[in-house]
Image (cartoon, rainbow, N blue to C red; front, top):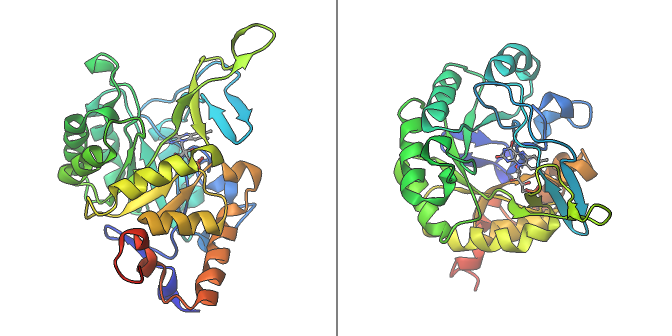
Length: 309
Ligand SMILES: Cc1cc2nc3c(=O)[nH]c(=O)nc-3n(C[C@H](O)[C@H](O)[C@H](O)COP(=O)(O)O)c2cc1C
């Protein structure tokens, strides 16, 4: 097999293929060992981790919609100490890139988390979830203001030399402005994007269905919207874009690649088919080989390329 066909580079991280399990839908990685060979995918992103463990939001926390999922998990997680102590030993042999997703309610929490991860050799990359309220600054989301995005990225960059991915919120006035800000702050890549604020009503109580009232929409419904964000950002930054939103087939991966995604993450689709990431890697391989395409990297951004148009 031609190794280079699917290989992609995110900063100094070389992924064997562009398929990555998305944060919050792939557990801490170990949970998927019984479904797939983790070595068959490019990597996975852990559930978002904070300094202290978090219980998350009141139930119900998930609502299915006709074309996706609204979740209000509330960033429940076991905390960084337990992750490093109890989880890491079980995923060290994963044979794929391990990317740790982190979040905080103040900038210094992000810095502390990144600083601690920097010492752990087996961790290949860090993803910053900046779609969180900045408690110290009155609760405004970190990810909305380009200046805040640049500052937080820079502060984390200062304490880590690991590949740094900034996961952008889609709820911004200009995706280009926040993507540029992440790049200026020293990010090696951006993930576009997180979920979209959404809600559902309970017909009996006439009140919001979710315990937290609102949540984030993911799945097929968001694919065309996030695809456009990727397209908008491509060519405006010179770091790779990781596309994430509603991907569940090799065709979806190709659409994202044409729009400008150098790699992709798949989230909600894992809940329908826990083997989907491995299937995407294999289907993508078959597609590229069948179409005589020499490398996945060569089709990234094809929609904006003058070659072949
Ligand atoms: C149940 C659930 C939990 C999630 N938890 C996180 C998280 O902890 N950190 C994060 O950055 N994104 C989280 N996400 C967002 C996903 O990583 C992804 O950005 C989003 O679901 C869009 O991709 P998809 O349509 O393929 O699911 C979560 C999504 C879902 C559905």
